Image (cartoon, rainbow over all chains, first blue to last red; front, side, top):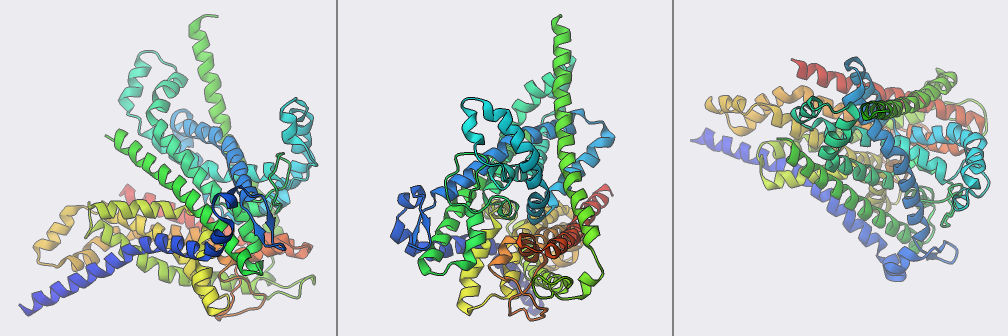
Length: 313
Length: 280
């Protein structure tokens, strides 16, 4: 009997240790949320909630802080990046699942995954030294000469093309999120039952008609989930944009304006905050970012789970 | 033109566009990697590995301090993150198998894998840096380990779930208690998979910059002391690339090259091991 008791005790303790380890996930989430709220409490108290979100003031000297410029910078770069990345990513997914000959499928897939593995600081530095000069010398003047001459769009391309601006940051961000979106879109496409596709081919559908009328409708939930996931990642990306966005706390009206995102402000100012309310306001920004990206990521995850449940049988 | 032809042309045009998209993706990869390789190899000198930095603005000096710092921070992050992740994943896949708890935790883990890493930096700053009054290598390691835990936990859970249940039953039938079954049978069956997860999680944190800026900070001197500020290649790249000196830029390229090669090798190794394992 003694040995079986000892076995039970060991088994129980092992299961307890693993249970505690699994709780770490809860500790991390609750801990981050709680600490961010605690640290930003003075700023929440001083600036309120709505007022903080809509105020464009960012003045460390007068100790007045508002998040509007940072939030608008975050949304503008993210939106523009998605605009560039989503069509490309879906194109890549179509290529890999439907078009590419078998010997190309593997290598292209691996290449896209390598693109996802490159650290964001490398993207940022490459953006600063390589992409920004190209943007300021060639692409931005070209855009000003073409799109910038159109009546309404003209506003978006005003300013001196310095290459350190929203457009450059968005391009880098787009390159970074293409792999995530593409690999989820590819997985969703692969969930389309082969029988349905083959039926369409048997009825005489062309390859594009199969993609458009069968694969895309079948996988739209998954693809959409992938897009929202990329959105969540783009919101919180720091190093890729920190080099090329300037750190300008004004709401940008042109794509060629320097701007600041929440992450860029944190990266540049967190260790330099010299007053308690300054630091607290930075924590407030971090809290806003954490909640926004958590919600986006949670929505994405739930969509992906539903997509999988619906079609995986 | 009849409708048949129109449909065919439409199809070809659309597929050409998707092919172009794929090549656009490849183009960026080649562009970025090519640039890092060309500049990096040009700037790479053996002395970078053996020398510490010289005062700002002077030519020469190396990155030994940052390389050692990076390795130490990552090593201790692995030492904290891997056991917690593997054990947590074990609970979800074994004791809590198919329960609601396991499902919720793994969804939450999937979510925090993508939570902005800079937020984790501010979190550790509040709980480890400010109370102690100074930046430290330990704080950096803990920050990185928080990023590793969900990655390792999820892969472990997936890999253990793939070990056939009958294998466990065979061990139970011999009278083995569950913990022994897990350690001696299930872990063995899933070892390659778990190892791959660990490799990929190291690759993931080795390139992180944002969570280190407020935790291990930076240090211009060589140091083994984890309780002091610690240099890392990534933060050094940020500092040097933003700095005014050409010599710094060169070293930033060299550091980028080193870190990119390290991460790509880990990633490829991970993929390769997975492929090889599941072919059998």
